[in-house]
Amino acid sequence: MVHPNKTYRIGDVTVTKIEEMRLNVAPPSFLYPAWEPEQLEPNLHWLTPSNMDATTGNLIQSIHTWLVRAPHHTILIDTGSGNDKERPQNQIFHHLNTPYLQRLAAVGVRPEEVDYVLHTHLHVDHVGWNTRLVDRRWVPTFPNARHVFARAEEDYYGGPDSHNEVNVPSLGVFEDSVAPIIASGQAERISNDGGEYLDNFVFRPTKGHSIGHMSIELHSKGQAALFTGDVMHHPLQVVRPDWNSVFCEWQDEARASRRWVLEQGAERNLLLFTPHFAETSAGYVTSQGDRFSWRYE
Ligand SMILES: [Zn+2]
Image 1: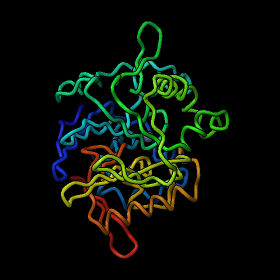
Image 2: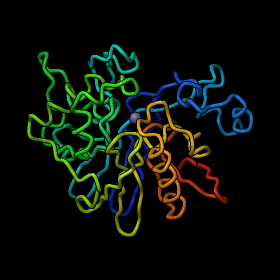
Image 3: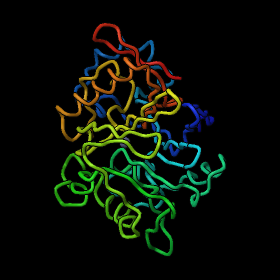
Image 4: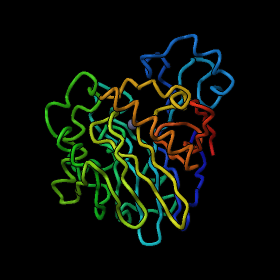
């Protein structure tokens, strides 16, 4: 089921989720190696039904992108998993055929109208729609877009070091989804220290889940929001920020970045746009002492 598009307003910018797919395949013990069955009971009051499938006990997640419409630009934050990709090691992403572009069209955006794609990182489910298969070749889906990502992401995922055990789902991803947009001259690398971008964005380094991971702050007319990227995969990590997902590559940095995002979110009352929470995928963090809680918006 596709959640109806809800549009958020941050100053004179709007943000809309474009869903690619909804997942309920991951038992918490898979997604979180630190998971202990005793954790279920005290969290059950908020885990069902929108965050956990009551029948299977699997966590419910979403894969989607965020469409940002600014006065002068049409921007996507990340690009999901893409269609037709060869991902034999990971059936979730293998030979997909989702109506993602039709959903983008349904909110009035044609691929040619996207002029920026800002990437939090270059993992399999964040770069997929960069390209689509045309006459057996991977061609840019958004022909007029600049794709922006941290230099460290390209340095690492473009080389053989990244093809390791942890990162098996990313095998082939750089080749079919990133290399073609570099070849077409559409890639723009930014400093690993982040920084301001366009009128409304600040790249904030949140290394850990990936080597050059960025959270992306959006601000307009005194209001602010944060596209968190994969510092969290499910609201369970708001409650347990010490838990890394099975896909986090640099463990200590991932925990530190998660805590930083939660503290920023709570202190500055930032609207957080997550890439994998279910429901609306957006919400607020509040803190009580050193504990955090999550509320969908
Ligand atoms: Zn992801």
